[in-house]
Length: 371
Image (cartoon, rainbow, N blue to C red):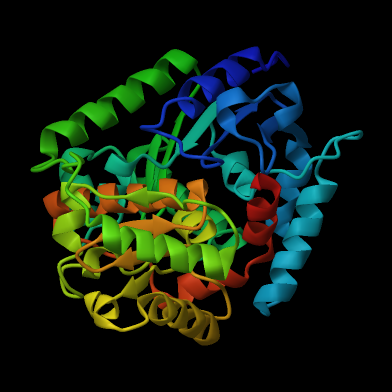
């Protein structure tokens, strides 16, 4: 691992970053290590068109020294201190902010690390029987339970990796993170590709039912009323993104059928499409003033949660979003929900993890950079 040529890293990042099966929007991150330097994706850069300036060169010795420090118990103070040490670990002249998962990348003992969030993978990691299914399908892999991201996640993975090495005499090349995604590591790009091919083909064979995204009929009058309410409340945009297909239709029947879409599966879903959609019941259309009734639901959501809804699910009608990015991740939520059916059914992030992500400065920074 002596070469400082990161062209292979750029190439593999673009390859997976441009493939919507693996990466949506700014999701995922990659890295490459030499003996002394780690090149890791900078926060806020999209992998699909990343260049040399999209990576941060970091001193591996300084990164390793982070593990010798004792940090405060207070979450906010700890995260600020770890971030400061991460920034100090950048090589001279580096100005970009390293990926939130740079510390995790740093101790994985392989040259290349490619971390992705494929919907099919998250059908496994966000499922009730995810761990048991992984142990059956990928006995060579390591499972990491749901923990807060950042320093704590890195510490949990580091400790679990040490136990794995002690038991098996080698490091895991595939690490599944509950409600998050997968880390794949190897010393060559060819092996990275081979591992991902194995993962995706194995999952594809194990999926009982894939989501049915054929278009469904929509009630144009209802859609027009929702769009009118959104334009009046959120701004003057003529038409907000809308989705209507058979998969979503089956989940918009009532609140019970909507349960599998009612919260957040992964941090990316929280960042881009919000921690939970707004459910609007069919009865609003029976009102003499349906637009005002819908707007009242928007205001109530904002009052309850302190932020505007990014996704609006209207019973027996369609799904709406306030931005294309929110819609992209909402559709991914629908995919993940369908895939979880093959592994015991859906399992959302726990409430405390959701609240951590909502208030975490790192994710707020990432979301702002991506705008």
